[in-house]
Length: 460
Image 1 (tube, rainbow, N blue to C red):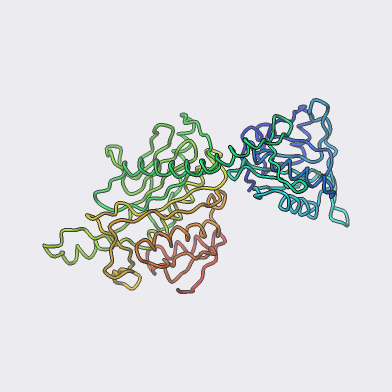
Image 2: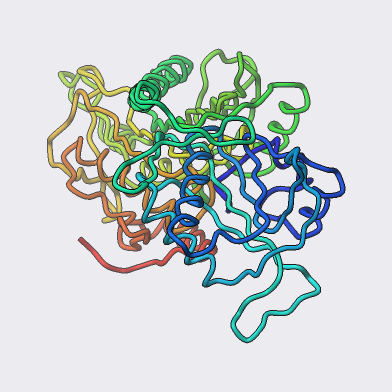
């Protein structure tokens, strides 16, 4: 999956970068496409001399510092920067590795870069592994900007200026660094804002909620129209939004201001029940689902003493684990696929409400009985778990998604006194012993197998 997402470039190529073929590049010549801030043509390879390596590093850093874009090696241009011929270049894995090494050694910090080889279909690889075709360097706009290039003994900061490159002045560099830190602060403020709004729409009286939030550092842009709403409605109603075995389905879809809404309640309820989605046009979003209270069964079987006025909540650790992973996957898919957001996502997970009136702990029923994982310790307040994860790692099932879920799951557990929750490992595996023999174990193991995730029988 190519990290760069650009509707403009996709419309120029007539396809996504992931499916780029040589005929798409030849079509640029036929159409006389002109270089721009996000499109750069090079007739030949960069070469191995120091000056040529610096040129490659500078072109990559310039795209990362501006709006992102692609460099196509193997396309000639005229004096007006229009594509005129596409003779191609010699492509090979060795050349791609050499280019990556040049970028890594000369650009600081290292930006996200995808280097694609696009072979001509009529040519075969030679004995040295080379083949005629094109090399496409795809660079998304970087939240880590400004990126510097090492030139001689100093650092310079290039950026695109139309179809050319210029270098930032010292005041511009200082401003760029200030914007980097301000952007991180805005991301934090944004996640807190959307959480407040989403939590305010939940039915909080009957049960606690597992709330997962995501804000990409490279915002997307989705226009809410009748068409986008209908596509969203069909999508969320034809497939489960949670992991297999969780048993939560969408029954209501709506729109809000610059957002799409879905939940598990009827059209006559004001509050969202059982499950809730608030998906914003910029790629931010909040996923929430009801957290089962393991004490409810005990209350029904053995009425609590009359003096027990407080409602102690004992939330299932398996439900938290499944909810966090389902939320990350759903929110990341929205951000990447509906809004074309990118970069690194700030993600958070929390239990809500947790208060003096609703003291909360984490437990399980894998032994056949309801047990707390912290004895009689309850929390009356807890901060959300928080992590920063590449958006692409979250947007598809696999070990990277499990790794991210493990980070949030363990941090959330620690807030309630559980050192390590156990369902997921930090290296992207699912631990079988921490899923009960009933309920979620079988569907979770099947999910892991279907998505290339290792299942282990290790215990902590």
